[in-house]
Length: 431
Image (cartoon, rainbow, N blue to C red; front, top):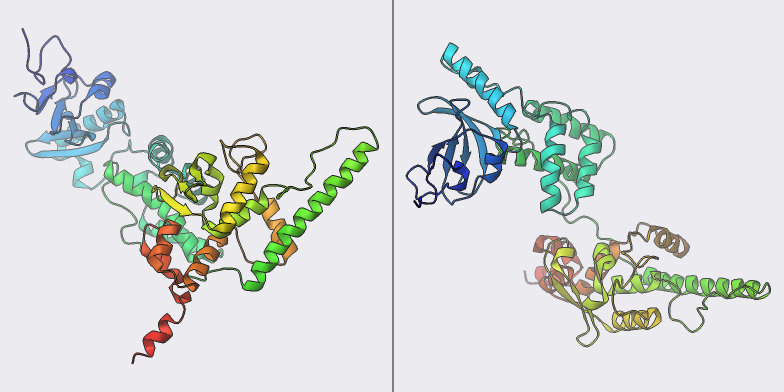
């Protein structure tokens, strides 16, 4: 005999047949087990599976597939205990038993009448470790950075139960950071990390209210100071790049003369080659494209088109998850052509590490270059600001600059607006 999909059949587990068209599909009874919970299906319609072991405990599956433990002790009286996967089945049964016992004795569970949460809720550390970070790693970039921020900045509240943490405590943590010299923007970023944890806990029904709901972000200068190279600094940086290469060439020739005198194998000569290592081509490409450092490290030759004179930044390697195409000007194009000719590679990373993998760091070479050039307060990321600033000062529309930089919001690009030639002066002259 065929049974409609979704109906309860005595010899087959209910989770194999739940379907909203079945007359029993909205509310069924079955002993809750780990296997049953893992097999609950998303049907596009909310339904409930009531435990036959603890009468009053059931799992609610929403139309979108969210699964939560719920306890009911009277008609129309129920309480969500927590999300499946956050709260274990055993914990849910223990808490439900306590709710039901208190309801029989007092007519209402103490957790409801006194606003108390169950004792089985996880600590902040447990929630972050067991639930939040695994979810974050699967859905977002920057896992290591987020995990580091959470682990090293919230020690004082990590072992508290997650629902016991107050906005006042978080305000005190924030104040401590400010007193220690952290800038408001840095403090906001740190608080944003923990705010994401609490937001997910609310969404997963682990807690009912967000402790930071009344904690406003600190005010920061959204435009800030845009650091770009002056004309003299630009010339000095380029001269220092060339001087550095000349020194490396001279050192290599000296080393080879020394090796030749001892009958040792010669090292490859840099004579006649455009570059002695990756630093100069990386700097020139960055200055002329505004590419982010991570995007540059991820760039592969297959994404460089000499025919269309563009490089393509794939969405899954960008900060905004959006693919963009950056045109190459004459200097950037010639730099990449010379670099490919010299490296002899037409596949793999454009700027690989010594073992051919992804390059992870250029700090030592970069800081040495800046120190030699006498340029202070200029980070690698500031080459991106320099690229944008020069475009705006040349009269390029801000929206075009936004596209080239890959900003998702024009607000990010507006920090360069004051550099547009005579825009404000022309405006006030209209009065």
